[in-house]
Length: 407
Image (tube, rainbow, N blue to C red; front, side, top):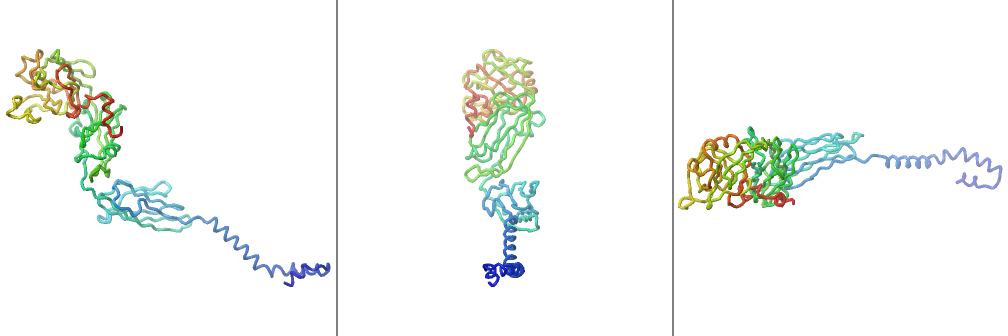
């Protein structure tokens, strides 16, 4: 107070002395206030520039009844992850996962199990050495039923021979699919060379895939069903993922004409064989349109009761036949029939099959394979139904596409 009074005095000499006194006295008198002010500003500046503390988050966090296909993702903010452990609490097995290049994210790399609980233990650190721990727990759902994606044709059955250009790719699920769009999104067929194709739901269990035109010979098909953990509806979930590869062999197409009673065999577009035939008689005509070979047997018992025409019906039959190739589930085969040799090339007398003599039947059997095509014209029959095994080619491309759940 004395210093301030001296500073404000109006007398010159005392002012000079007072100024000297102020100069000498102020540092000692005001150093505390000045120092506190500077320290406070420094602290505020340090506080504003200090990096936020590292945090770790888990997604999903403490969730229940999640799909086992849902990945567990752990993230660090304002720092990096030092380690992450995800463990099945019952089996004590550790879930595999991968860190991002900057170690700010960890993602599980394998599916979880149904009806299981997993503990998550994650650790993070910042550049200053501060650490944080984060724990969590997730539980997966328990489906009432699990649907398997059976494939037709069985990949093992055609691994050596390949399939023909008319072969549709079929997933046959062990339980009905209610959520068809959700399931179809997880199905794929990749063709090399690329060819346009689409799925068609024959019914609630069977979905077929075919290209717009017959497959190109030499095509490789990679077929996948990524359905594990997918909700099929009605308590059913996908049981497993599946990926298989098919190879398309040379083009073999037989063209059977009911007017000429002849069948021409085309190999890669060129006629290599012509055979006299006898197709279905008027009461049991052969279906019209493209048929696809689905099964072959050198010696086969044909029984009409397998498709509902049983003993007692005038159209019932049961016979042992050689060199048989099935072309529909309605009892239609291409096969040897010595009893109709006299009619072959002149009239239709069969129960719907395409009859050949012994030599031609053996040649057909040995050269035509699964997925090869038999196109029937002028038979007097109805169009082969799309649901009759491989009646896929009976539909125009526009109508085929309408059978997709994603249209």
